Amino acid sequence: MTYARLVRLVVVTAAPLVLAVAGIAAQSSSLPNLYREDATWAKLPAGAKWGGVISVDPASNGDMWVFHRSDPPVMRFDPSGKVVKSFGAGAIVQAHGMTVDRDGNVWVTDAQIKDGTGNQVLKFSPDGKLLMSLGKAGVAGSGTDVFSGPCDVAIAQNGDIFVADGHINDVPVNRIMRFSKDGTFIKAWGKRGSGPGEFDTPHSIAIDSRGRIFVADRSNSRIQIFDQDGKFIDQWKQFGRPSGIYIDRNDNMVVADSQSNAKQNPGYQRGIYVGSARDGKVTALIPFVEPDPEANNNAGIEGVAIDAKGNVYGAEVSTEMLKKYVKAAATTTR
Image 1 (tube, helix red, strand yellow):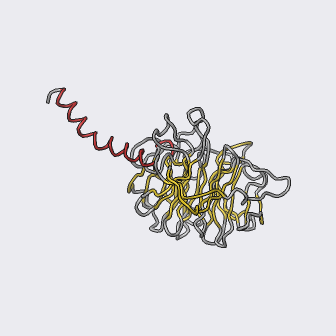
Image 2: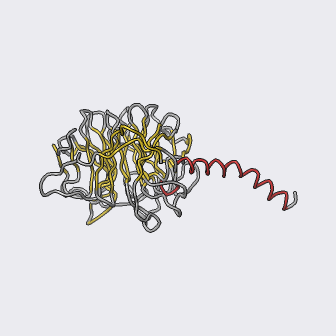
Image 3: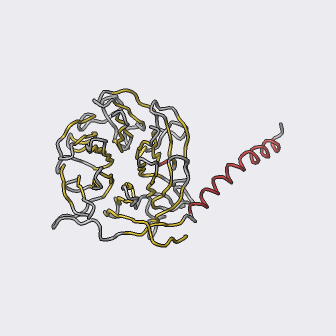
């Protein structure tokens, strides 16, 4: 085969892929915004202030749990936006991921190390009692009993614990770890890379109604989907550069993109992508207005959730805000 013919073959073979990627990017810029902000919802107690708000998850009764980088780091808001419970002061080095299990227990990840503490996954009762800790406080590594910056945690229907691990830069660990409900290590999969089953900052994790594991493989600008044994199923790039994922019981899915710009995932806009975990269809985008996204590689919404009424919540780290979005009376197309 001549060089010229080889070049023509590569171009023809790659063309459909290039067009498909371009089509997805073009779609993201024209998605409708179906929501409006309820700017008066969250009401902090007198004297309290937000730290970087990193995660938000609903309780079964309609309350919302929030995890942020100030004390106390865990707060529970009732539907009116009033704080009705808080705990964890002094217990967290860097607030990161959070989920609420079927029994109402609150699981959080502490993603950094300081003075021999941090770098663990912690399980609290709804009243703030520490029920379980995974990992060794203040110790990082690639072993099965330690983490390297646990980014997020998700709980399967049978109680198994899935941890997205890999937020400490000087430890080359990027993996998903699976534990039984009593904390016994079962298995891990993944390494740093860009191929199927490889990760570059697995920043968030969620489970759909079929038990599939969705991982926000942020620096690879994709969501990877696995079965619970770590078998690769698919990858989706239509939800932007994902920092956070939330999937409700009906497989409605919201994905936070806090990093897309011309250098990182060009063609996509920062904000909350709204769609379905069943078929991967994206139906709306709640944009995050960034004055200069090219100068700021990470700004905006990193944690997301949906409540039982379909309201969407965005946890903003850099701007230290929690925002609630409700369906708009009239839709607008961007």
